[in-house]
Structures are given as structure tokens and as C-alpha cells.
Image (cartoon, rainbow over all chains, first blue to last red; front, side, top):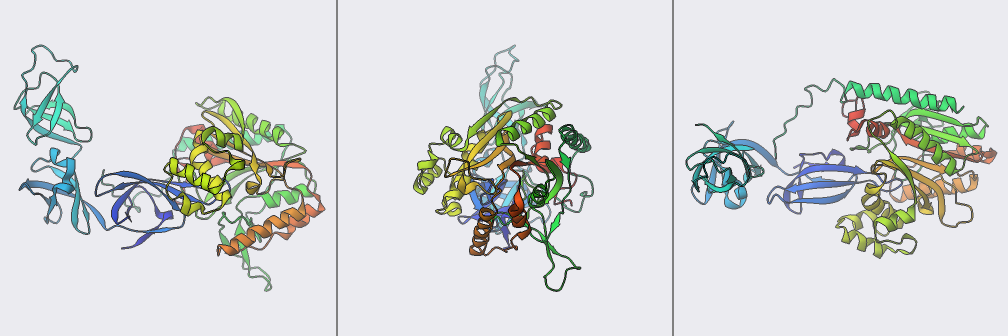
Length: 189
Length: 337
């Protein structure tokens, strides 16, 4: 794998750090008045999603990470692995629970996700920003209350629990923002 | 996390900034020229390509070959990292107060606030002390901001040591490297030890940039003055002090806009500082440009007492237009050049 000089750092670049593949979120070149230049970099560890900050001396090189982001269709889970299919090559990949992490709460058959492959192994799956999921369980709402205040918990078909307005009923389809885990709207089937 | 696929060849022919920004740039340049015309400060031009250049180890230059050089030289010419030396040679000849708006070049420097080719406004005021020069900078900049959406409140002046003790736990004059390491640890500034090693001057720069600078100039001009001698550069020693240089920097919203000196007029000390720089360069295996003997000669002839400052005009335009990245104020940044 190629290595990258700090001059090539930019958002989205994939590098190896402490043995883990990481993605640069933000790179700030700092050149104090008369001092030595350095790069202050915000980095996301692609294996655990943690964000950290690092300082690199300008001109230093780091090893690149063989990381590919692919659009993949989510197929099914066998309980141990979650299976995806690359939309272009039709190749199938499986990700373990550790790799899918929180995302498993938003994975619905047929939905297209972004799967991150490191050395051709799935290490992370990012669901679409919005998914439509069926409510499998929620308390009956109070009639006439259509305001957004209050709300109640609802369990969705994937097992996720989100707060929904009181008028939402069991078996209805709702749209959820997977980035915040918040209810967006009711969807007519 | 979103998937970003970018095809560089796609549509990079156009400017990277809005055309309105370029109109604002033209307005800024003409306003600055008007400011100096009224004050009887002469506009000059000096060479972009020179046979010598600044020696400071932290500046990386671009160089090229001049085909018309005599056989005795290797024909290397340097793109100037600032117009300072040539302007001082004019001052020594007795030209009086001068200013210049020009391109300057610094290799490797690229980022949100840096483009390797950038625009400098540099001016020298004969007979001015630093307070007079800071006052004039304030007039220029407040005048420009009066025509922008951003309102600046009253300017602030803090000494370098005061700023440090205000925003960190450090009393710089008595601090040691182990104190610096401790502060870096408290603020989780990892990598600092590798970067600064046991160099006090590197530590000061690093900690200042990370812990002090972000607080400076919140919607106002903040002048930091009285730098320690290890950051003197081309400033003279403050009279009556042993370790304070007559240098200042000016900040708005955490961005360093300019750097000013009460100029060093002592040829011998200047030559010593050059030699020290070149020694540092050799130690770090950096290319060593030839020492600018013409500048030394001009100082021997006599540089009038003067103060000078360089302002980064691209950054000033960023602040005037509320843009966040230098690419947003350049027609064609280095990646589109």
C-alpha cells in the first residue's frame, strides 16, 4: 500500500494508525509564526468509529489503508453474520456483529448500505440516512393528540426503539433518520 | 459517513471561488492603495525572483534556474518568501516610507489558511515605533471592516507572556520543558513531544498555536507584543531588556493576520542571525541559500529607524467575507493553478 505525506492529507483519506484503518475527517495545517509546521488531524477509526485527534510533523509520511467503500444491498442475517451484496460486482460479503455494530438496528432487507472493506473484509456498514421501518409494538395513542409534544416509545421490526408521536399505531410504517435515531414521518404504504 | 467520489478532471477549469469574492478582492486592493496614497506612503515593486532569499529554517522556498547566469554561479534563483530584504535595501538608500502588494511563495505550506503562492501587503514606516505602526494597522483594517458585514469591537493589546498566562497555566519566563510537556498532557495534545523535543522555542510556538491563538481576536483586533528573543526573527531587541524582541503579531478570530517588527538595523547582529539560521538548516539537512550580502551591506550603510509589518491579504479577505477556507478567496488555488 502506498504511503501518504502530510501534504496529501485531506478529508476522506484512509490511513493506518496504530494498526487500525482510519479515515481523515479534517486536516488542519498549522504553521506557527516562526515555528515548525505540523498537521493537526481529526481521524475516525474505521473499526470502532471513534474519533481522535493527532499531531503529525509536516512532511512525515504514514502508511495508507487499503479501504474501499462500496454500495451494497443488505440481504439477510443468520444471527451470526450479516450478509451484503456488492451492487456492481454481485459479490457477497458477510460482516460480524462487531462490524455492523449499532447499524444492525437500521438494516432492512433490500436496502442499500455503504459497506467499508479493509483488505477485502467488511469492517463497517453504514445504513442509508433514512429508512422506512414497520412499528411492531407501541401503546395505543391518545385520540386527538396530533402535536409533537410528549411522544411514546415504539419498537420497530429491526428491534430498534424510537420515540414517535402519540398518533402512530402498531403496523404502521415510519421513516427514521438513522444518524440520530429520530422519527421523521409516517409513511403511507 | 458518506461516499465521496471525485473526478479531478471533471470541472476544475473554473475558479474555485465565487466571482463576488474577486470583486471584493479588487475593492480591498484599491482601498488599501488609497489608504497609503492619502498618507504619502510610496508604492514600490521589488523582484519576485532573487539570487538569495530568507534563511529561516522553517521557511521552505521554491527555486528555479536562470539561463542567463554567468558560468561562475549555478544560476539558482529563489521565489521570494517575502519582499522584506529588497524593501530594506530601498529604505537604506533613503526612499522613505514604502509599501508593496505582491505575491510571495512558501513551499509545502498548504491548508485552510495557507496556499503556497499568496498575497502579501508589506509596509515600512520610517521613524515609526511599534505603537504608531499598530495604530496605523488598526486604522487600515477597521476602515476595511467598516464596509463589510462584520463589526469589530475595540482592539486589544496583550503581551506574549500575559496571553500565555491568561489561557494556559504557564508562566513562560520561569517555565521549563517539563512544564510544557505537562501542559500538553493536560490538554491531550499528543504528538507534541515528538514535534518539539527539548526546543523551548518550538514548544512556545506549538502551545501558543494550540492553546492561546484560538482565543485571540474574537470579533476584534488583538495585538500580541513583546515576543521572547527566540522568536525575534528580524526584530530588534527591546531597549532596556535582555530577552524581549520588539515584535508583534495581530489576530482576528484566531487567525494570524500579520507580523510586525521594529526593524533590526544592526548589520553585525543581522549577519549573526543569518549564520545561526544557516547552521540550523545544515543541522536539519535543509538546503542552504547563500547569505544575502547585499542586505548586510545596506544595513552597514545604514537602515533608518523604522517599523514594518506584513499582512496576509488572502486571510484578510477571508475575514472580510466570512469565508472559512483560503481556497474560497483565491481565483485558482494551488490545486487549480
